[in-house]
Length: 508
Image 1 (cartoon, rainbow, N blue to C red):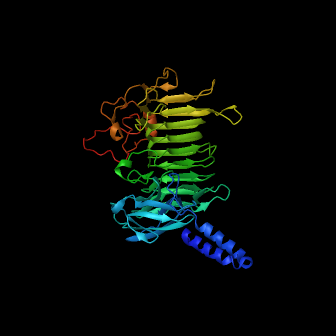
Image 2 (image 1 turned 30 degrees about the vertical axis):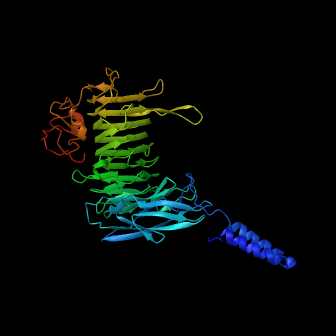
Image 3 (image 1 turned 90 degrees about the vertical axis):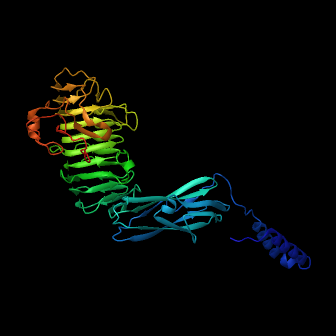
């Protein structure tokens, strides 16, 4: 709003005062009104330079969710608000990516990668328009193109995030907001299949409704954005149908080399209470917080989860977190998890055969065992509730890592885990002389091929070679990479074979 200069306001008042000496009674009211206008027009119009001043934005990020089929561009907009009582000057508005950015911006009619000294009047706003242009057939582009618009005001730095697709993908974003909780998520309300025609990129929560099955076919690639998770509700099911040649991959949406083995890039796959009959075959689940969270028994007869020929690795918290569940695993490798590779809590029933657990997590110091068994919790009234184990069985399995103790027991006093380690190789300080440990190799390095490059195949001198049970191997005749193990039963998910020096260990 334009204001009347103070000198002009008072000049008007002086003129009115002289006029009023002749016409006192008729213009008093008019004079008072004009005096009031003159008074408020003399307010302080200086720029607010307080370091506490902050801008407000209509949204904190812009998602360009168009699926581009040719060279394409899209425009989005947001508003910048000055909610203070004095004028603000934004020192600079800039694209963090500078001249190399895929984005272009226009701030109230001004364009450029850096704009300076932009004023916003008190209780006023600015419009910012952002455009992005990408060529989705250029496979050298990252899956997502990220940038930000940075605002500097009185040395306060704020930004609005920008995200667009660099390649064609199925974009899965929230399509429903719960009226009670206000939580937004993408709901899958009917049986669905995700295939390998394009990558899937998931933002936020994807919720599979009760009685619905999500089927993921061979070769599908699922990319989870920061904090994104898949959640399966009552009686819903996940069916992952990868193959040895075309596994299904769950990972983050950052494909740069730095993020290749970076944990904590997304949330978890959560198989909630009373979800059921989940089957995962030939999957690679990596670089999240919790790989699989299996929560309480979904069926009194069938396993809640059957997982075969799969890899879970580089999780910031846990590879497999099961609570009172029934899990059957074969040819499973779990590697490099920040707290636990397997956290088996609140009892349950578990069967792991030809599993390799190799925990050399290096981001932070790990003070927890790779495998922890727990059978109780404290309820809201402070009372201990015991949830017993029906069975915990490990057959032809390696449990090894960087810590001296890689098997932990958190059991309520006077209870047991009913655990068996049958023809296993383990690293533990536990007494292994009892009947729970059958033909088990204790505290001998399995001699993985190269833990630095996450290659957990066996070296020629490994004590795990030929030390497994043939009876167990007969039921699982091929290893994680499809090699036959019936003639020689090695411990772990991977049979030993001679490795050429330049041989690529592959995605696993």
